[in-house]
Image (cartoon, rainbow over all chains, first blue to last red; front, top):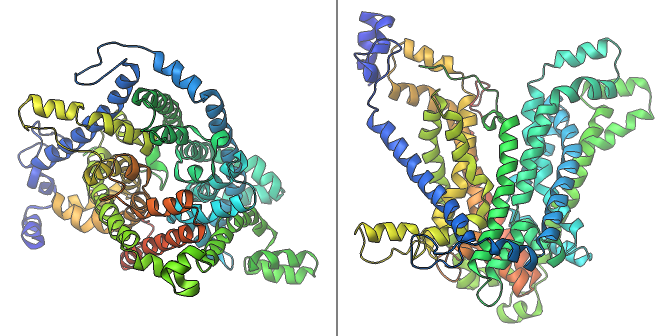
Length: 307
Length: 310
């Protein structure tokens, strides 16, 4: 393969090369109108995925507004009653309050604790650095249930079970390493000579952090915070293990409503709660995408050339 | 921890020791890592060690039923086929789901790397399910793909099938939910690794006359492979610990009786904390074996700063 494609190039010269293969017969910069079979396959896969995605979302939304919906394409009567009913029945004002409070606390603590650690891991080499990296990687690599169950056992043994504090603490376990991992590339891309210059001009460590690094890191910190916020609001497994009736977050209440004894609550009640949950998450995601390009998290982007 | 205790020492000793330590990278700045390390030690390492200790203290019921003394929990795990089979059931769900998510996101990420109209919209739509979470996806699947859902209505209406397809409350339902929640994640990671690869490398290959197959096989794939391995591991971890979806859209008594579900059953329903910790621990072991195999293979690949690294 390599040989018979390379051979003619040697004869005709590099200039002719791009015109071979798929784009044969086209002028440079010109594109085919009919896509290739592989492109069709990709688009077909994407369309299937989107059909399922939109189907799921629209079905839940329609269900939450339908009075009754059995054997028809759409519900026969529409109502907003399920929302008010769900709000009162599950004390959603309290649940949402807990959710927001927990999420904000987790974001604040994990940024305060995680950013300094990621600075160190990004900039310095010191004995035991590998051990620390492993220590911070493990909570992300392990399935939450694996450490969640022993952690919950410890918390119940110490009387912390079912409290809001316990919910905050369990959520910190994956969040702190997550902040460290997402912040490290951000810090690496800041030119270290800026810090050196500040030091040369007489700034001490604290000044370097507050006046040089912090302003440069704001986009990164914002990105990490929003991701932690989304993760914490969506975190089911860990929260579920330690939360109780007064410390349930929104996801956990939805799950409890779906599985409660006696066949679960009315389906529309669950749908109404689910719609509220998704709307909240969606708003956060839109805000997040406003500030960060998700594909820039791991490495700096060089925009692919348009060819 | 040793590094931090040593770091505290130079403050009291002479400047020359401080200087010598600083040359080896030990200075007061290392204190920055202490809060994060302490937090992880207290909330992750300690409970984990406690849990391991707990597995050797079986409840009387387990010890009586299975014997084996301090190892009764392990005897029970491997002796009780109801529990043991959950390992295989979990793998049968998580491995294909993770593999599918990585393989499917690669071509889509490559297509979306090019500039075209509506690229941002497309990316946002693909990332959208991250906001749904497993619980809402489960609710949506139950309605959308259930017996009276739109899929079955459409299939019945067009005459493609004679009776409603059973898409939820079985293996397939959980698989669907794993793909819907896991795919955006894999897609995000793969596209970030892909965007880390310098496009000029491909441009150079193209100038030298490489076709797209060659460019993919010789340039993109080798640079991307470590990233793909990482993506596979992370998606696998996600899929491995499913349990809301296994309970809600699966068949929790049979085909989707995953390990997480068994661990939770021991923890919350039987209040058998030692057994719950044993299942959780063995879950971690099984998962780490898979992760270690993937990473061992990955270490054979190119690791450089050209991007696409893991």
